[in-house]
View 1 (tube, chains in turn green, blue):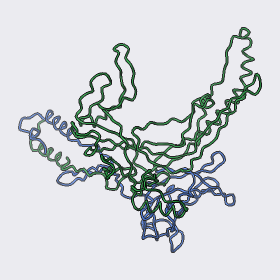
View 2 (cartoon, helix red, strand yellow):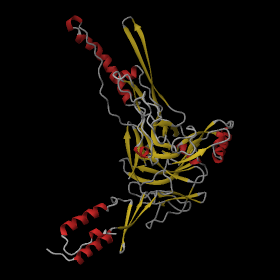
View 3 (tube, chains in turn purple, orange):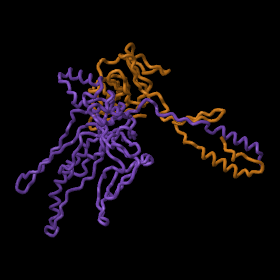
View 4 (cartoon, one colour):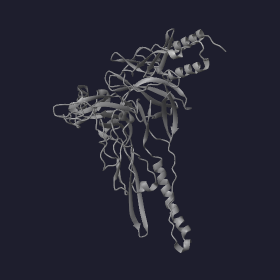
Length: 344
Length: 196
């Protein structure tokens, strides 16, 4: 079939009409989301080098603003006034200028960052030896691709070799939210009740935190805590310690240096902050209520006594212990107190 | 602009030309269309804009401060129903009327900080009977999800915090319409709520 050039021109005209003429990008709304961080460079007369801080937009946990621990004299006037009035009402002395006080996020609390080194000048997370070469192999945190493109080099895992050349340095800090909660403690006593009997006394108890308000901290590196007892033996021998709080990793702050060389690597003024958020919402925290019963591994003792004929008797003796052990484990399993966060 | 190479001349074969055009169209696809992309087609072409923010600018159940003593609550739903509010002058009514106009302002307590909450009441069959906007001292709010059971009228009552006020600015906690359920667990009544 033949086609006419004018038809083709008409088709092109139509295509052009429905193609984008312009493309606009509107940035995020000026209204910050909860936990959004505004960095500020802080330097006072006593602090010769200066340091980075962040003002965190008010984020709520169960509708209560999280707080930051600050030095009293560095808090803003409104927060100081609140503390003064509370001290008057409680008939307590006013905090001293250098005392640490609770400043809530809605009171323009400032969080001081604590940095870790990432990349070529970073410290290894673990070190292992290579028997063949006699060298040391380090395991390092990877530099995010975004910063690699900006000239930050990964660390050399071979510790005895020369570190790689890099154009910039990178620092990082993790912002973590803590929610205090009731926790579990266990005291186990083993004493001899008679010549051939041992009495094991297990005393589980709860620790209720005096202060249940959520708080933020800036940690060099966030490490997730696992606080669930895995086996009955963990409980009895107190290899399990429950933490009196739950925590969630809100964001990571990265600080990128200018092009190397630098006059002073400790002076972070002029470095550029970047933020990676894991959470953009207010949170609800609720402790766990319905738990899955974990499998119990019964105590067993296999000995070639009487050519194996004594085994049923041994199992019989252990059965009672197993019964109590199962009951004790159930008690703990039903009282795992670690909670969960969810957005609202 | 369509590139000049796609313009047809007399004698060109149509199929290769058409394939070229399709390739060109494919290469011009800028982004996938989702709720953040706004496409406005005009006689002169399409205007595409991308907004790095939620498309909605209205927060359900948003609490607004009216002067220093009064507040109102914007349109929002709990289990698909409007909560009720008691204005400072007048009887209990829906937080907004059929046209979306908020109810007259309700009075705030003088104590600070305070929490504006939705008090949800369930009947003995765990069906939501009513929800009402109230205020409460934050330290009096017990554990999340706690609920009380009344023996007299067999009702389960729980509180859902909506907004926090320390001094003169509300910080909104809930940013969605919400679903709430009551349940009995280990002998105690509880409520659970989640965004919809």
